[in-house]
Length: 354
Ligand SMILES: Cc1ncc(COP(=O)(O)O)c(C=O)c1O
Image (cartoon, rainbow, N blue to C red; front, side):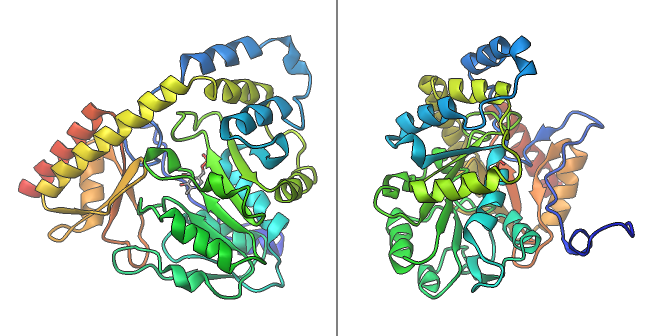
């Protein structure tokens, strides 16, 4: 606390990311990172971009990367926006599409905890829609007047996927609001809403290279939507920082879209490992929410989640525990490599049988 803070800085409650401890080597299943390395082509592209052109600013329009992404998804360059991670891109959406004085924007009561943080930072009013007891989305509750809709699909931290028919119904009932579908985890089994972009000019699909393309450290996210929405995002970006993506990130991100086999192989492996892990956990008596993401949300009737979290940590396994209403007896566990997940399941077995 400092007396020099603005009223805003004093009143906001910043997001707290999952820990990145340095005290010892953990099995890290707490921040939904990919256990596999990025494509060798990405590393090669970054290495060859690391030359004396770094003295020059990067392309502020990111035209080459936008073109690559546009081709990949069968859209035009004007329907693509890129940002420094999808977190930054989501932040830009608030001043671009939501109004401080307007009706509240809607999102689920249990979802990505950055959303209410942005609302406070940008003074955007919000209302939460309560998920049912199995964390399913009551879709009809989005059929009312609002200032915008924000849906993580698959949802975080539950992993549940909302069918595209439901997304389409939400779009149809909200022609006057921007509907943002945050698809950070879409490549692990869900079906993207990107095919609806040409049909609905109020749909913005947001994705990231952090999870399915193993590039959390590069910080690249992108948004797909009607060119009017993309222009709105560009206006906000160019009022804050014209060069959000550096030369290395631009080169690496582009190469990531040029190595489809690596992407397919990695995501398929994580989906397989998720299936095996779920089976093992169910045999230990855990409830596991059906997941279309690279993490699972688990709970055990006989053991408190917070105690499991602490004991796993003592055994060198980090998972994510949220001390929040409704989910304080649940753990979110990222899907790591097969050997990491075997070690995690064994640690749990040990805890609950001794
Ligand atoms: C639902 C959701 N959206 C967006 C992000 C942000 O991803 P990034 O900023 O790494 O692109 C995350 C990260 O964990 C997430 O869980």
